[in-house]
Image (tube, rainbow, N blue to C red; front, side):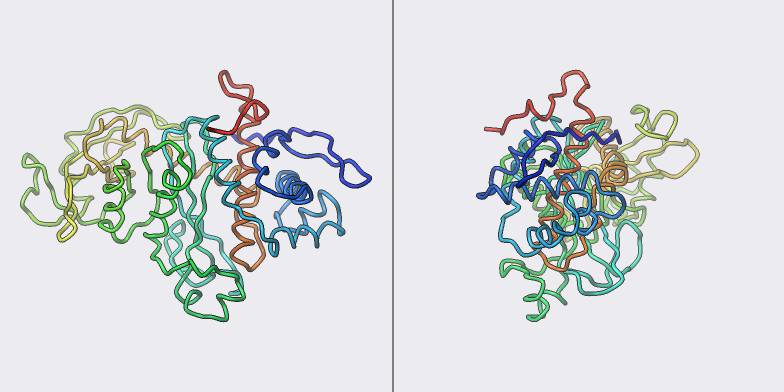
Length: 397
């Protein structure tokens, strides 16, 4: 789904009329603003994210909604104001959950390449999407996902130690005192776990579509929270076969690719993957454990094939190892849905475009970009049977 539909409503701004997208929807999401001028600026910014041509810089956004006079006002609203983005994200999560009934929360990295080093969190660091070290910001997004669409609900910016340990850089970027050092694995995990813990949204399986370096540290908190988890792994990920009937049992740690090669005879059809890939997908699963000392509970190593004679196109670990194979594979396909929507909708509404330098400014921009993404998705799908329009949505209890 890549159509962008903007519902326009006439509102007053001083002596002139302006338009706002999804007026009832934005009014509900922006109810946490105490002042009417803040609500108006939020709607202006949202309109600009949806309508501005090219890069969604504050200058381009201002040009689409009010010209040069609006630029300074919107810059202050995003970068220097005091409003809290958390209530807006919480309201967005409630509305999106009600409208879409997501099957899973998909956590995906977002690397934002930067030429300089002044924006908060910028450093030369591993970019999971590119498979190499690049200069830029690394963030993680948690998306509500169904087979047909997805919407980002939560964002977490990875802050390298070079930023957290430098008092001058930390003060200049307005990084809060509560921000502590964490690895990318910890950042990705926290992004997912804040959804049910902080906002009370329904518990759903988490699909972790990122480069994980320490599997034990990721699996443990999800197992303790009893949240089903699927983690993308590589052929070189080392695991221990836990199934007595499988080759490699008691052989010590083995690469995941080698384990799945021994399971080729167990492959069975699980359906046709959505998207450009044609034909039936084959899948197989082997019960495994993490290498000691992390071993922990049994996991299910899942391999997915699109061609019989080739190596698996994807490898995943499922925690716990008890769900039906077909259900697990269909959950992994939601990662493709999110990747497509991030490119076709998310980039269009500016998820990579914030040019400010502050921690708070980045989070405010990403929050309103997520609202713009939701407006695009929910308005575009409003004519689908059973899908409520934005104006029909009500805050969750």
